[in-house]
Length: 278
Image (cartoon, rainbow, N blue to C red; front, side, top):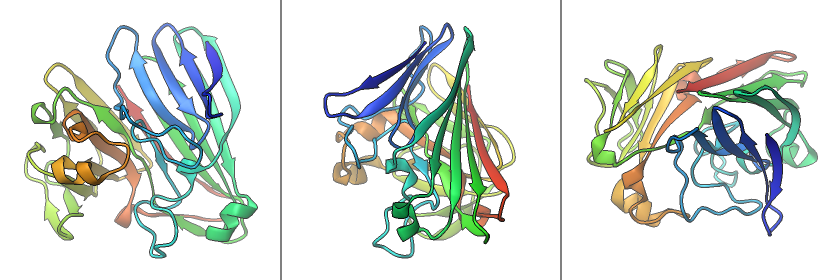
């Protein structure tokens, strides 16, 4: 069942329920902020004090960073681009299979976007809700000149406690440590006892988030970069829409095209970043 819902402040979202799973997706940002299989705990983390207001990004779920990831060289432009706070349109849905629901959300250039990013584009998010979560972010260049994008499906995963988790699948992969701006190489699995903010490159296999009682597997296509982030104590205390202990129960593993994995999209061509989570 697909239900259109609206909060008292006018904030709109889509609720999906089928026999395998349920999800909630805001029209602002095409932001998927809840996904859980039937009779299981949510896979995605959502801040208990997150804003659900026009113009403010939701803290948690899967924000869409596009057409740039991180800070723009022009510091007056929004961090992680404009897609995550833009209003998208639901243009397609299919719930003919009781265990599988498919939706497509679309964002296109406007006078407002052209003021800060001088290209014409069509951006679509194809979401499939079943016993696994699939997100495909398709960028189509409808301009007459090529453009370059960096982007991410900025997934926040819910964990029992950050001390209980490890991340497998990135051993021997090079990464930029965003805290020291040094290039390093991963040795073994990743565990957490301090702030971590790393952009891994040359990623070519599945990522496994191993928690105390479950494993979450992330498969990416159209991507060779992955961001692993936990803000830890001090940064969490400075962040908006985060309780002071929020870092204990979340971990971001972001499917990305970041830094060396930036993509050039030529006129009338497309690029798709795909993440499958199960």
